[in-house]
Length: 74
Image (tube, rainbow, N blue to C red):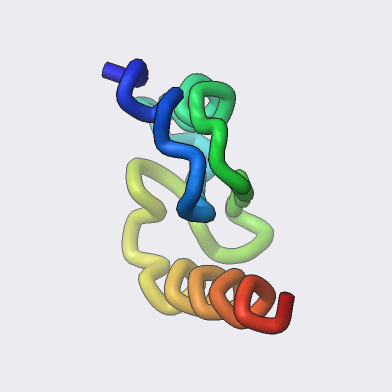
């Protein structure tokens, strides 16, 4: 499953892992990516927990937009 990721090297990637996600494969995916990448781990201290961050959409959205802003700022 991760083999195609090894050849994708041009587009920056953001992965967000929710601490306590029972099905997380973030580390394996992060290691497989060859593109510029960021692995952001959010947890209860940010209001995020459980599979896919549970109901913390506002926290996840803020993290995504902050990452986009940082990429555009160079």
